[in-house]
Image (tube, rainbow, N blue to C red):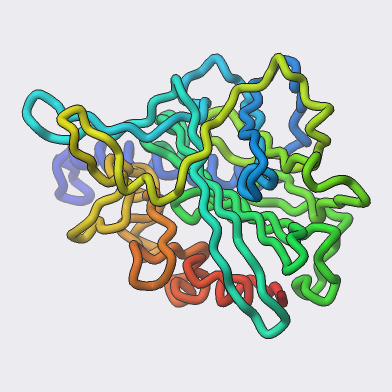
Length: 337
């Protein structure tokens, strides 16, 4: 028994351990927020995931360069469902085959009509050593086209709504940029350096790839750039099947039935089945006022579809930063499309 507090010694030791763990994770979070050197891109030793075809969804599809490809959890996989012996479903990501899920959505602003090409990929997990550790992790890339089918924005965000990065292209007028935006400067996204502009120049859009380098373990975008498809090393390419985004609601089961990748009822409705973020819940949920903080979710088509896809941790900004209403989302972050 502690003489100073009257609490049992095991409880004191437990509290000390918890506080030390919290301090360590907060330190790691602070480190993640610091700028890091530009990562090295070597397409001859890294795995390159591409999706090739002639449709607009194929033409503008992002390509992903995987750092440390020997680790299965770094590979883009395919959401898979199986039935266990007890009859319960098991949802997991199969890293032996890659699938890029895609969908087109339109939105309007006071300045014009736009189309979003939404791309989604998933990974087996983020290892336990990371603050964002969890299973069935995902990443979304949104390519926004103007009425001339030119990409004006590339938006990168994890399927939890975390680590949002918005990159304008040379097709976007300066008047649409947030106040004080510097196209020549890198933007610091919690430690990762992304460009302030993607310059298409006079390149052929059908031959230009939007490239993302994904970091080891966390799958975070650590670099984004443009590259001619003809310059990509064929030997390093791994094909990604292109599938409809809504097919995630119909994962096949061995008994001939189907099940959704997302919870369809209850307090977890719209969240990815099997997704959990124990460290984020323990150390962040209480001050962010979000019990399911960091949990991967569906990007619904409107406010009635799935969970709020907020991209700001401010509790009062949940609706304004919700990507389901893309016009409102852009306005919240200062963009004037």
